[in-house]
Image 1 (tube, rainbow, N blue to C red):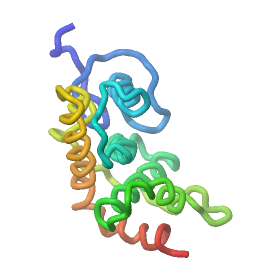
Image 2 (spheres, one colour; image 1 turned 90 degrees about the vertical axis):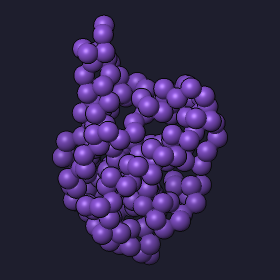
Image 3 (cartoon, rainbow, N blue to C red; image 1 turned 135 degrees about the vertical axis):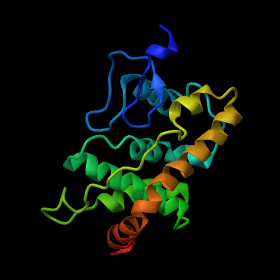
Length: 176
């Protein structure tokens, strides 16, 4: 199959081979993009040199592939954006990401969904994606791209939504 027949991932826009395969029920990724991400995250294939940013790969990917508006997708994108904001803006250490995500999800009784609103996703055309990360020639090069990828995903969301995310962070992460 020639690359002219490849189709864009609905989340990141990467042109990848079409096909069937597993995806996530509310993350908006093509099967090919999901397979690349899953291999990077779960199997370390291709390997990435150690970098603190690797802990944020899940946050960047989920934020770049927001899916369609639904209670689950809205909450997922919000929590992953809060994690990016916490590390990149507030200076939270990456070893505190699980705490940060858990804190953001801790709801009051009857408030499982509904504390966050759907945010219109930015345009990710031309941005880095996991296909670019996986395609880098060496583990250190892939690590460098992961770092850029994480920052770039946040930089795409920030212009339109940083004040909302900052308000959520103050209310749901810093409060208590």
